[in-house]
Image (cartoon, rainbow over all chains, first blue to last red; front, side):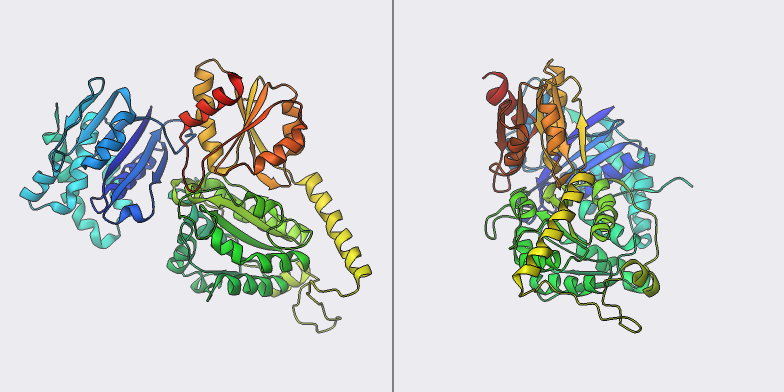
Length: 180
Length: 360
């Protein structure tokens, strides 16, 4: 198993931390992982993206030409990464703010209205976990149990009471994602 | 008990490894993309546990001179920075090399020249391996290609630095510093006691009760003596070149084409090699781990069997000069590089290999 993923959106959407949780979850399953952020001023209001690779085997390059799966959370990122998905790969996008939806015919495209859902349920802070839930529905790279374990391991204890809310967010994401 | 595997950035791994192997002092000044070294040390507060000193100096120049002082007293001391900051340290580095002191310098390279960019680069290869500061000296230069090596090379660098009384440098870049990977950190080792330092470093300024004073200096006004000192340095460098070359070879046995790359570029080139092999192209990868001493013999030996060599670097062609010297025009040696903070993807490397060597 090897999954090469790009997560891209605006700075502040939780792109990097979503990638981090995914990488930690891989670690919980003794998989090889790399997390390579586009770092620097890009993170402040501009676009933010992170490449996450989860694999059973040792990983060579943390930087990729093509991705198995792209999670796209804003229009500029769609323009940047739609062409870089492998044929037969997966594109997941949040409908919020995407005026021109993806057009490729040789990939599987999924829409998840996580931003709307998070706002409606007053769970704005778990937006990225809703998206993660959607991803794990389509590509079960790691188990939910591993994600919860990763959260428990990485969050300071004073935030552990938020873990059930995050778990709920993952389940919401699994419910609302739909293929286009 | 199984070793604990953790996930962290390369910069964080440097800081954790330094605390664990018993480093006495860190002196630095923040600069992207290596600021997490100092940040992690500040977060970990090793002064409360191991007694390690962590100090944010007023400048890079001050930091390297603090290292000079600490190293003179036999302590395990280090500094870290990124390209423009390492330029500022060059005078101090030359003095430390001249005074034959062990220390560790970490350079997490970014694009230049000048203030440049904060994105990854390998354009300080010349600065690291050909001097940087003035005078006939060498640094022992280690080039990590993973977060694990960031952690491992802290200990290795100090081991070599003390063995040869010579400054060592870890030459990483923004990719290796900023990415997170699995890492097993070195086991905890207590800092050396004063007695242990005196025993290990009879040359150090440890207080001269019962012995003649030790003098730490790079100054010698008598050229006859200065020449002898230089000859001694050259002898030492020859020994390091004979004994301490490190490199990694992947798929080289049957390689018709060889990629030579270090650090982050070696990782990208490895993926390019995997794709090329899927297409039936017999490509191998030779990764210099020590940039000085350079694995000239290994590259020369491999050159025999190849139809051509591609050197991949995040610069306009620096390490290629050492590769060419090793190969001595026996096979074509071509360069592929991206500049100023742009990092190529594996496809670009394959395309360069085809355009510059295979289709020629």
